[in-house]
Image (cartoon, rainbow, N blue to C red; front, side, top):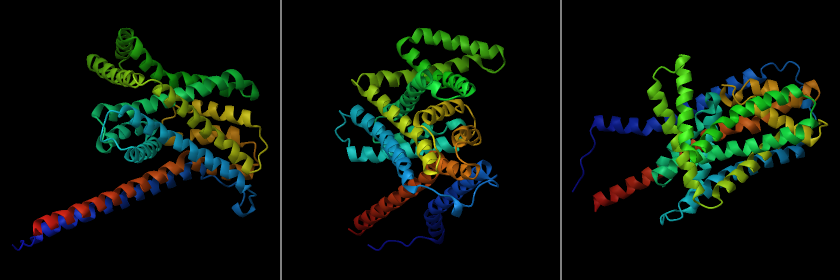
Length: 374
């Protein structure tokens, strides 16, 4: 039986539906170009003292270790999410490890992307939870648990490195003010993991602590609705605590995620050393590493996307080992590995997802056409 042709109104709707997604992708990419341009201008706009790029002598082969550090660090982070998906879904018959690796890769990259475009890195974890709920083929609880554990293990991994650096490596650098600021920043950095661990093992004591803290904030007129704030905070903390309890049921899994996070943070903190040496800087590894960890801790609470502004200003302590004309280019390369690359990878990942979805839609349309003809 011949099928009726779509009306003009239906054709217009189909055209709008067809063009909407590509236009959104283009708009999304343009927004990211603007973000990169504005950020780069604010960070590196004052390049009057920078040497001409043609005059800069770079040991390019020394940038290979920097690139490898980034690549292996990213692989460790993706491996951490894949491991959690594999171990926590062991009883799930339809679980596909190849699918898990793809979901883990996209969860990590898009999480890092949102961390770097939102103030104080608040966007990464909520998006990871949303993405895994929508695409992870996991039970609802695991889709929430995995990003939460990913964040907590990452924080604990960094804290472990920072504590060791401040205890045993701080004497290798002559900057007491930086170490003091870094220790202060580490206290705030440690707050949330400590709260979650206390809620996991001492839930009643943690509940009383939350109530006391909210009451204090209410008296200071920072919190308006005290009861609502207590309920919300207790719910969030309990959600994190339940995630920790769930992962602790799988022997050795939590320790493995922390170990992989330690590896990730070590590799990321090594990148400035290789960038410096590539540009001819004569620096020792340990002081450079400890200073990098200290600065990362010190700028933790800067409420700008990717710590923009503060990161460049404070990391000048590291890159000041170079001649003045080289500092601009060395810091630009470092920021590429630590910041800009995630903003580039994010839209590329989105575009790949768009192509895959379009392919699936076309396949479904062909199947529908065949069934209608039959």
